[in-house]
Length: 415
Image (cartoon, rainbow, N blue to C red):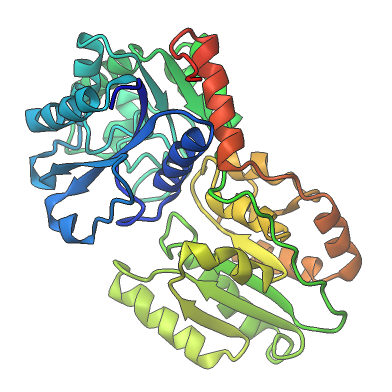
């Protein structure tokens, strides 16, 4: 490759995992190429997933790792990770690296980038730099929201580590990140948290993630008198509010038996149950077997999500952590559907209450049930649909990134 490239680096490839960070990173890569940039996409791939990996072109690369060799507390990778990344960057004549995660890559790999004089930009998708609890900023075991980490607070969640170890973790990760030329956050909420933690505000830009397709659906017009359909899309984990979803199904069924049968209300749940504890699975199966108005429709392909959402009236997002800029929200807006979400963090920022959707109290199934009842109103629904915001696509996102690179003096547009 003779033309200087921009490398978009992610902690996994969308053919292996379909989380929001990797989807956003891949959309940016596609958008950059659509803008005429010589972009490449680099993904971390565990050796055990090698057979599942599907690289789409000569512009996509993989770094193969053994997860057992990764140190998760300090976020350190083996030296082989840097050797593989450096070889790819040299082969592709990369002038600028945009990292969408350091998980799997290790902050020591970012340190090597700085030592090699390769400018890099870090895009944040959660709080792993700050929080050792999967970057969720939720305490354990109580699962309360955490406003700001500190060595003392973190040892309460992880007593197996000392305050000195948490202080060292912060110094290492924050010190390495400060070597970045710029930072990107898809939400103001996340950017403010990272700035309060100690990253320089003047290097931050808020750029919304763009969907891989720019084609917004024309959703079917809602027919009066038909059931109100509420859809859930995503993994059914505690952080994503899987327990709250079951609670509200149980609550609505017990409070008003029969009211939510046809033609009143339907619940459609699309998502993955892999990795859930046996007690959750048993309760899940019991509830869905007992309620004709609630249906579990299994995992879904991202290519189908627009049509699946358009077949609902509302998209539910009961996450119990702060979130950042969830792709589910953008997908719902692109499908012309308002969102009912927890009124905190990035969700509250992206879904203004009573404009693009409705809020309910975190972890409160009774309040979610109340909001679902309120949402079952033709006048309110029409008002919400009329106020849905436009959705950014991959090209718009790429142009915003290119403008940032130019502004920071770290990129040069290719002709």
